[in-house]
Length: 411
Image (cartoon, rainbow, N blue to C red; front, side, top):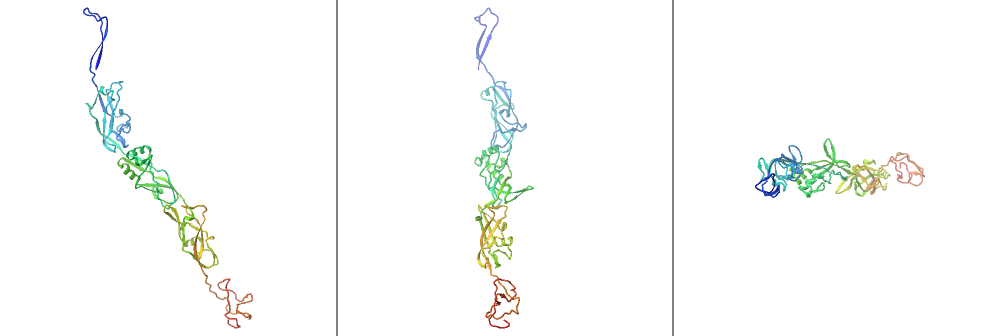
């Protein structure tokens, strides 16, 4: 370095003269040696897994809990000249990003390039000539809460939930994306395999799948395992929470119902009423129904046989006369908490049935003394008057004749 010397003198000498000047400047060479500075690493570091090996902005001092925000939070310099503008430019990195204890952190201890030549940095009494490592550092697992938006579906007879979209916080999503960006979309986790979910009820900590319409707890299975496989189970602690959901009533048209019966069957009784073993009660007549299946879509069906309430008056044959393959109209309403009929809850289903001829076993209540005055015919009546009291089994169309028209006793 060049050194400027500013010289001055006082007094006089009889031996020389400086031309009247009392001060003057002269230059020469000089040396400034670097100042020794003692460096101390502040302490072991710890951080929560963030998918990087970074320390600044990520780690904390394990002893004090102070966040590592700048290089000054990593090391201290003792011996810097105040006001010379020297700044700490130290960096430090973990040996890798993964969770573990006794991890190595490597410090590249330095000052800014302008000031670096002015100081001799020493660590443990020796000049720093290479990065310094410590092995008492820790990276802990990242705890990730996994939640789900409310879901909904129409009743389909199953408890299955097919809408599985795990969500995490924005901070967690940022870290997860560093491990597998293809499985993170915003704050939603995508592309997981082996995950399932069910609607159900929660009571006393016990979850029971429930396929019925209504508000439900929704449980998700295999999500934590799948996320561990995708993002690294050793670095995360996934806490998967139950969600909520609603199963809405299925809305169907009558055309969605497949209907069949064994065929109504009764003995002629002069009415169109459908009867089962002589009873027209709804629960009895329903015994004819073999199929009442609702198509709920998606390959799902529901058996409605137990939910049909028969209109006893309007469920009838189209004819009261005896015969086979008589059209039968079944009229219902649906009493089901999971399914509703589109429009008015009344519908009809056709089928066929049989009315057997009624067998009449006739006998005369008056078997003797059925006399009349000869009238040249075998009819058992005289003009319009009956000559018998009644048939045992009434029938308005009943008719009886004599075997022959000739006069004779004991006919």
